[in-house]
Amino acid sequence: MPIYQQLEEQIAELIGDGRLPTGTVLPAERQLADALGLSRVTVQRAYNALRQRSLVLAQGRRGSVVQGLGPRLHPGMDRLKGFTEEMRLLGKTASSRILERSIVSDRSIASIFGLASQARFLKLVRVRCGDGVPLSRETGWYNLTAAPALETADLSGSVYGFLAETCGKPLVYADQTIEAAFPNEQECEIFGFSHPIPCLLLKRSSYTHREVMMEYVEGLFRGDAYSYRLRLGT
Image (cartoon, rainbow, N blue to C red; front, side):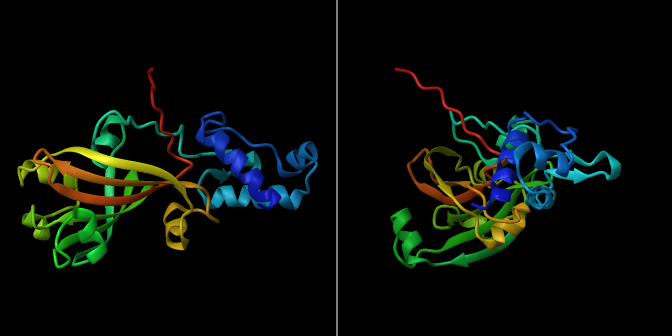
């Protein structure tokens, strides 16, 4: 990784962890360059990249000021909940932007659900935001055999809420994995990244109380905003 990107990521981590809170004035480019033994151009490129990510704001004579995403989000992993509820519990307002909505038949997805290859699914690609900040891009497939009402439903809000309240099919448990992944070009544009940085890829299969698989979703969550914590016992 180029030196300027290393510096960018180190500063971004300090902002994400709250060690550089919103309103902090960063050192002048020349001052930081001299302190670190780097060229001014290197520091300038790092600061410009942070501005492109909306982590830092140039304020004239004040210099570069941290605006950031605030402290990292620490969602609990003790129970199944959708993005909308998760944002509510974190004190944020959830919103979504639908990039794609289609009815598909996909043999590989059908095999994940354990259904016939010609089974129909609602495919939903969304950008999920908290307080207007894009936090994840997710692609979900939903079982139309079990919940046909999804095909024409208004899904601008919570899909989980619609399944529970309208379809009478609340989701009660899920199998989920988390792994590291880099965003593609479109995802970098959505998150405002000047270059790919590590993110968290969540894959989830969700079920109703009758053990009917209702959802398979893959969501890429921005690595500079999320941190998952687990309490482990013996």
